[in-house]
Image 1 (spheres, protein in one colour):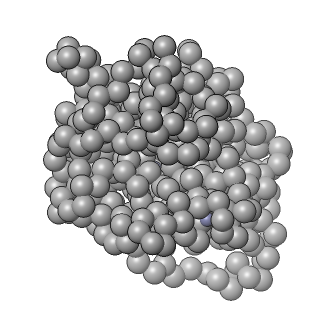
Image 2 (cartoon, rainbow, N blue to C red):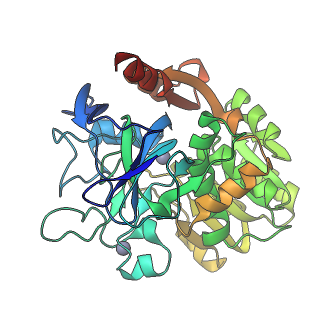
Length: 388
Ligand SMILES: [Zn+2]
Ligand SMILES: [Zn+2]
């Protein structure tokens, strides 16, 4: 039975929502604690999501250590009761006033960014590059949201999401697989929206992390040919082959640029560099054909020296990528729902919610060659139900 509260929010008896929830919050850098927080209330164009699973991303590790790129209430996210975590999925537990796009009980996965909807970039669909990033508080509130970056995220039992950021999950897709859709969406955004990839073009991906491996899978599904993966870890290169790479190049014992030229003739049409080191940025530029494109999908912390002259004289285009704009995540879901590739090949570990610190350690130290570590919240919900 649906019920409407005084503020126009709809709840249902089939998804009882408690007043408080368990949530991990960031204290000082590296300091996480599990606390009780009030369950948030969705506003206009928003829903409350009961989180069922959340994947750990390298950016979570960065936020927990350095704060950036999170900006919470106008500054670093430390000691503000801030909950990180952004690659989550769950079940809709309440609907904000006027929301009829979803129903309570729908399983959804989420993209991270809901831009302000007002700035020049949001109006272009580039809401991951919103000019009002972090402005969602106080007098200057523009309504921007990037969950786990500028608003509370997914290492908690519940989170608020704008309806534009939610995508329905098919019944036969597991919780863990659904957490990977946004990663595939980032790869999709890099390949199609930024790079304008069309079928038959050659793609090289450098760096078999989660985004790189799923870039291989998405590129193959989009009809790129050949799809080449460059990596140094044998196990990850093998997963790349399973996800659709036609060739893998082991950067430890092959001349990467020469090999790419041999495979493609005049060099690759599109190179996605997910490593971002001086060596790989230079390789990327030198392996791209004249008029080709390079997407930088890694965020090096220090300035990188590279052959800018070669890039300019060869009319090579260079793209930075920020997140997963232009609804690329929705299109990644369309591919995954059709089982064009098996994203779960990058999912290596699962932990319960109360073991988040151990889960983060596995991701950070790549223990047992961890690639994607997923935290399941199902135990936490079961515990709450038993306690009632
Ligand atoms: Zn992420
Ligand atoms: Zn905006």
